Image (cartoon, rainbow, N blue to C red):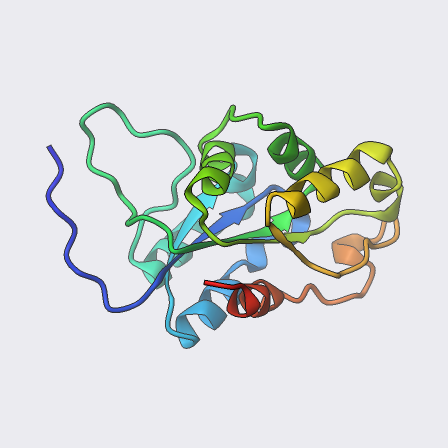
Length: 182
């Protein structure tokens, strides 16, 4: 049986990380969120784990990275989220989330966030060839209709390492959440 959580002073942000080349830089978002007064927990898709420095992230946040469901009766390793930032979000993530597929913990959390009204921001990171697929546009429209705050960042060129020289604006997730109605 889990113990009641101690009262928190700071709001709690879940950072959902997906598998892509820039995922290893998620520490930039964690640091920016903590600087703005958030406590942070990371939820990674299973494919994202190899991209992450687990030890550094867990040391920085004070929480384990979550990527799998907990066993029945197991204590919750993270407090409930006050907001969620999905960064970087891949083509696959955007489409599965919009379709309501909950085959991983990360997708289960994202799909439940709609029902709980948890403010959620997404920073897609994909190339323009994938973004041209009609499913992507429909999925973004679905997420917007669900109230998800979507980054204005344009897709990068295909085959460009790390996004084609355009820096990924990790802090945009925090800017979107700060502007969201509460």
